[in-house]
Image (cartoon, rainbow over all chains, first blue to last red):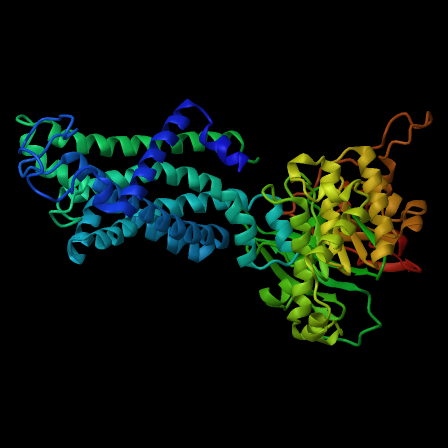
Length: 280
Length: 353
């Protein structure tokens, strides 16, 4: 527990990132559990204020053309954005960890096959691929997550493989073999714990990237259906008011940016902390 | 079960005519050339030789950890308690590792997993041993180990396991074993770690412990302690030790029997006293001549002339002939096989035939 605290307070950037990320996560959980009851207004209810009103004490981020409260809409999208980011990252993490470690540990034909298939994934522009998958599956949150996971795991597999190759060179792996441990236990007990830190650091930074791509896809209209709110979709819908009511596209875009910065700072700090304390 | 012969008449391990080749793009390297060696129960046998003479290859092939490829088995057998280990598939071989044949490696600094506590790692070794009693393979069933039922009648509690971990550490003379068990490897010195490695290996109660240069990475004082410890433990836990070293003096201190290797071959094998008092092979004599004694009469050491062999282009006859001060013409043509000349003293040289 002590080391965890050391990790998130490694330097000032990390602290800031941790603070921001915590605010997002707490807000996401509160809104996710409480729904519109914890928000100042119902996010999909129209005419809660005068249409296209500028930010004011009553509507801190203003209102849109239909008179919906922008702050409530942004806040109501937080759980979705975080959920997509966490689900996509964790599934990619797991898939990458298992496939990459197996590839790196076993080597040979299996390694070739797994790594060449990641090459195939890398060769196709990921956003285009995700779009095609999302279009094929139809718009929707779950479909979007499927699409993202499909394109998201290869870098994790690559990282896990590389780290595994580093770890198997240590003689404790050889010693584990000599004491008669099977491949499964060696991976579980000796390889995974030693590649986990690097993987976690990468995943933390990566959460921000998922948010960007998710926002991009929903900007293109591939995530939640209207009238439900989503940051990318809001930017898309409000961009026509860039001149007449600039706060409309500005605030959702700002929140996308903040979320990305939060996890990037946190992940960066974790990586630095991990590297300064890693073995070998 | 391949080539099982009558048990009882056997040494613990009989390496018979074993040849291993490393295949590479630059050419094939004959790492082991018709090596035959017996390891008697409860004996410490030292394998001595210079870098690249095949001593580590021999150790790794006995425990079945040679990377294949590049290594390839050419011919010969490794009989362990009468079972030929060479023909075994990976899974059956794995069941021999640890509980039957264990190994301690050269680098104590990286031989322990940095993320687990010492106690946990020893526990794991004990668990491997216990799990084999639970699910005995065909060959282990015969040896009469307790069955699952017997195990269930005497279940092991956590404190029982913990006690065994502490006992294991205590056995290798680690002070405050209870505290050390809760430490991480980085908190221990090199000598301590090597002791922990030995404790881990012995916790599995193997019949053979292969120690590959176990004291190369630790200082001389610690080296002496560890070797003495290994020697004592050998009798305590009834195991044989195959000590691989480049240090002749070290082998002289602890080994019961010594095999000298050169260019992938055993050139001389004898009981330790015999070998050092009456070395027969010119290579062994050369090795002994370059140990400094510190006497005034021999101010200068006598090095063995020439360089270490390039194993890719071996001479057809005796491997040592090009460097041998007493080489004859026939040495260059055909190698003399390893034969017993005096009791159990074996040597591969024309001079002593």
